[in-house]
Image (cartoon, rainbow, N blue to C red; front, side):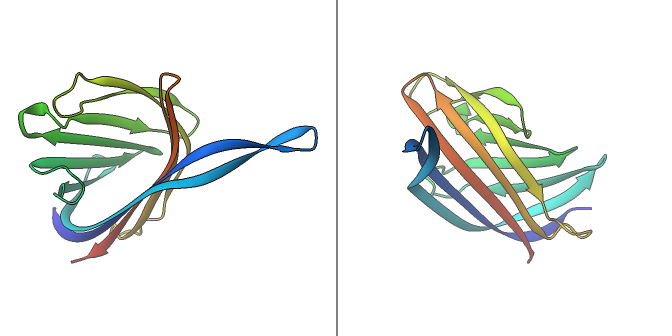
Length: 157
């Protein structure tokens, strides 16, 4: 059964730098970008998986886009569908796994991104309320590498 929920979605992006520390290096994170979206969506459970569905916002630069999040077996799958497929994305986040994600940027050719998931935490209760948190790294060729922390907080509507 589908139920309406309120969502608080935060995405924090960091650049990673290696800082000398004696004979080794420490990984240092520098905050680059932060986005917080409050929206309404729906949640349902099917075949031992939880689904969260919502419309993207103009604030995120994704008008006329719909996102479906699936949480199942310690894995998070995020699919975004845009008008005329110009904002599409299909990303799977599973701790310890490196995956390739095709990402469509409006008015550009699709790009392939390497995604490595550091951790995934599911703190949803029996009713589906709580927080999903995922820490992952995105790499595009040798030009772009960022660490991301995505949190999806699901609350009663």
